[in-house]
Length: 196
Image 1 (cartoon, helix red, strand yellow):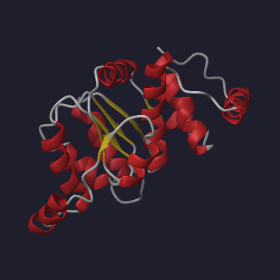
Image 2 (spheres, one colour; image 1 turned 120 degrees about the horizontal axis):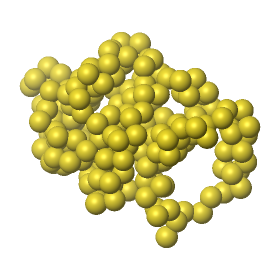
Image 3 (cartoon, helix red, strand yellow; image 1 turned 60 degrees about the vertical axis):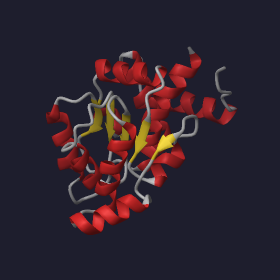
Image 4 (cartoon, helix red, strand yellow; image 1 turned 30 degrees about the vertical axis):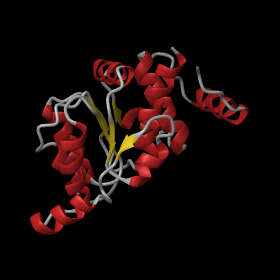
């Protein structure tokens, strides 16, 4: 069953496509890019996003098989409306681990989530660069990492490290990002799967 599309969303996409030609983009890249621009009203993402069609296809296939979706923050999780999400940043185990290991709660939440979700998950990081840096140290074997944390401290560097990791990834080059953008990127893949 596909989701209903509200007339305001249809109009928003019509406006977006009247201002930017996305027709030449590969199908999954186009879906993700348009959804991110739609969610942010920021056309800079047309050139800022780093999409690899094969990585997006791997993520979409994992979602189709029911792979767990893991988020770095409650804000990201709240934006993912059609799938249950693993988010451990508020988990007491993460709080305790953060204090013991002297790391951020976001990084501790990644460690706990990795144990809970196991290999093959789709990871969505839109809030904390420390969460993305931590994920890169774990044996996560992700199906896809949507790495779009925001900020002036470590965000661009974390995304660069993700691109260098060889993991299937969707990211961007700048300090931009955020919960809404990361959730929008995942939702684009979920909505395509629902439409099949």
